[in-house]
Image 1: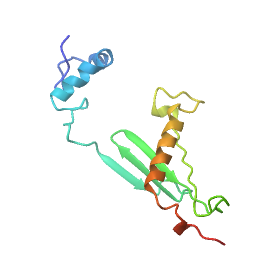
Image 2: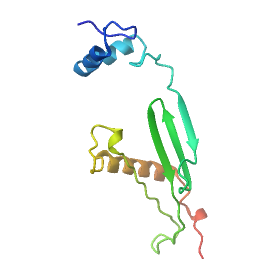
Image 3: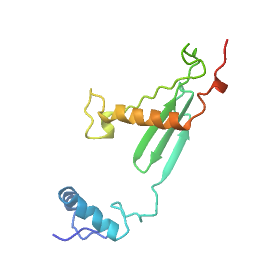
Image 4: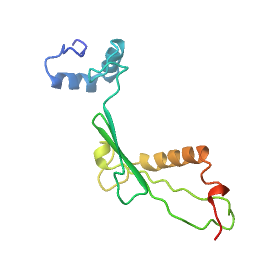
Length: 142
């Protein structure tokens, strides 16, 4: 069986899909060697991207991003709180990451994605490492 390429050496999409599933490494190596992606885009060309701000009316901030056929939604909710007695100069942050079953064949209906808590922790750690917005300058005593 020959290797597929963007110009269609294989007679049907079914054969291309079968080759991709049976020989994934060869499938992607061939595309990389020819400097094209499996969808026939050059390696340097990004997918069409759109971003819509304010996608969730009940959130303080939100965005709906579409990159190719992938759609992502991010929303931020904020609330005023009283700092703890142990850390009166610090605020807090809570990250929730949701990945519905439509996102991946690895996610089953009714069960949270196993990756969700890991991704939530990574996001939280990244934000806390980079952010000074939880500093004393934003905390005020009433």
